[in-house]
Image 1 (tube, rainbow, N blue to C red):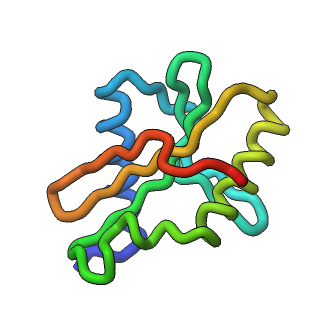
Image 2 (image 1 turned 180 degrees about the vertical axis):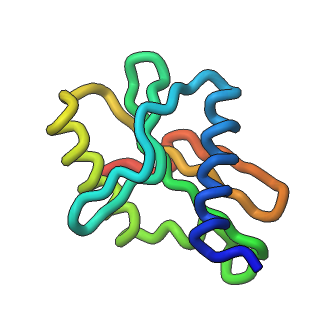
Length: 114
């Protein structure tokens, strides 16, 4: 049986391949600070893209998209602010890649910091 951590890593790798195939460049993975984490950090031209990857085997309870709550979004935004402080301010956006079974969905500009 495959561990949850291994499934998550495989999902993030699938998401990274999907995004690079659409022109984004991966510049970071699993950036962690106290209280938050960003799965993938990409460049889309001059824009830094912070990507949350969600993997679900089934769509019960709203599926992968429903699991990205306001609290989760706030943690991602907080981590993104730390990343930008270390690497320089630049235009950014927050995307999500949803993996449900074999289906991949890319939500560009999925949410905005408030």
